[in-house]
Structure formats: structure tokens, C-alpha cells
Length: 336
Image 1 (cartoon, rainbow, N blue to C red):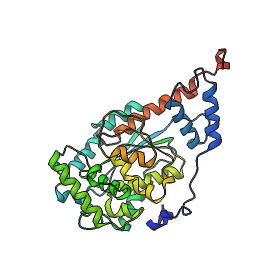
Image 2 (cartoon, rainbow, N blue to C red):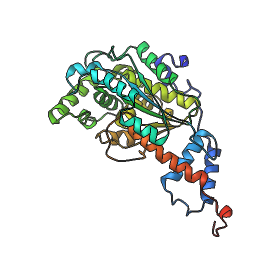
Image 3 (spheres, helix red, strand yellow):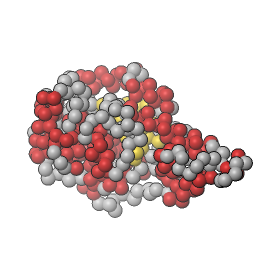
């Protein structure tokens, strides 16, 4: 990750020599899909997902033998603005719950065969209040990115990313607003349970924060408005790309976390899928702006990586069909 210094280096498309999609492997996977005992296209998006995994894993018959899930946790100075009904102590309490196996993400990782790790990022040292100053220095941002990258298992076949942090739905809205523009109100939702007046207050906080840091571009936006867990997610996404590991992002907050990567260089996210469509109102606009379609749409807005962990089951289903079904020739079925 030292190659990423300084932040502006990532904004030069020539800075990182990134592995690219393996078109030959994807074509071979597509050809296999045409030979399986089913009408062409009848498994819908499962066929597309199998082809996507083939292209990034570089093999016509991709597999998920090792699935890694990472949840990054951080605290935010913007909570001083009264944007959340819960105290910041809840972040550490939820981290402890993850570690004890008591959260939704724990159950879904067990169900779908993912190994979960939780990385708490200086919870006793919140970022600065983004309405008053940049959230992090460049050094702090890069350190969080390094920690995110270092947590990635290079032998994983797929990486699930999630987050925890009281106040981070406000931070996510600010990142989305800074990268994609529009009205601050369109990016703000209930978060952990804000009512209508609180949502209006959050929108005002987001608008003020983005206006304060108006000159930030690309990954400078991450330092100006993000949190340590958002920076760690960005570092993990880059490390996964360098290792050719497909990524399952969670919903609104995870998608917003990587928005600065999209702003710096959209191709940095080519290996990423979005696990689910969040019930947070700003998520649809972000996914459309990134040209990505979430795998699931179940009205979820929990975070923790829960939607991405659930979507892992869909990936496993796609590969079970892709690798396990017989071809027409193998089954002795006419018409293949």
C-alpha cells in the first residue's frame, strides 16, 4: 500500500497497474452456460454472476472455497452536531457483539460460509467534525486505508465488506453528495432511526459539510468527509483488486464509502458487486450513477455487511448451477 502515497496519486490512471477482467475466462464460462441443460438465459442473473466471477478469478469454472467478510468500525466527530439518536459508545458495544457472535452478520456469515473478522479503528479517537474541519489528515486517511488493505486475505475467493459506526449514515450522505451532487436532502435517510425533524437536521449538516470542503476532489473527498471505516473499506477494495478478488459491497454506507474511488477512477470498482439495494433513499441514485445493479432488494438497511453476506448465498447458487449442472451432451439430452 505504500505505492498509494500520496492521495492524489490514485487520481492518475497510470499510477496503479491494476489486474483487468479476464475476457477469455469469461467467454469460456459463457460458452459453458450455453451447453448446460437449460434454455439459454433461463437462469437469468445467476448466469451473469457466474461469468463475472470467472472473469475476475481468471478461470472458466470459478469457485468460492474461501469467503472472507470484513466489518470495519469507526467513530465520527460529526456526532457533535446531534445527528444520531444513539451515543458513540454503541459502536464499541456492537463491535463486542460481533466478536461474541450475536449480530445479524454473524448468523449470515455462518449460514453462507464466510469467515468474519471485525476491525475496530481507533474508536476512542473519533474523526474531526466535518462541519468544522477535514475529517482526517492525509496521513490518517492513508493509515486507515493501509489497515483495510492489510486485513484482506490474498487467498480469498470473494470478499464481503461491511461497516459499523454511529453517525456514519450522515458521513455516507456527505460523501455521496460531494461525489454525485444534487440536493443534500436526496442523500439523507433515517439511518439508525432518525425521525422527520432529525432527517431535516441531518440534511442541513450534510449540506454545510460539503460546502465547507467544496474544493476537494477524488480521494481528497475521503479525507475531508469520510471516516476511518470508509477509508479502510477503500483500502480493502484496492487490495482485493490487486489480488483479483471479487468484492461484495454492502448497501448505502459501503457504496458511499467507495464513491471517492469512483470519483478518482471509476474502473477501480470494476471487480465490485453491490450485495443489496438499501432502504436508505440515496442508495438507488448512487448505484445508478456507478452503473451497478444490486443483487438483492429486500428492504434492508442494517449495515454490518448483512446484505452482502446474504448475497453470498446467491453467488454460491450461481456457481453450484454453473459447475454442477450437466451439459446436454453429458446428460444425453437432445437439443443442446
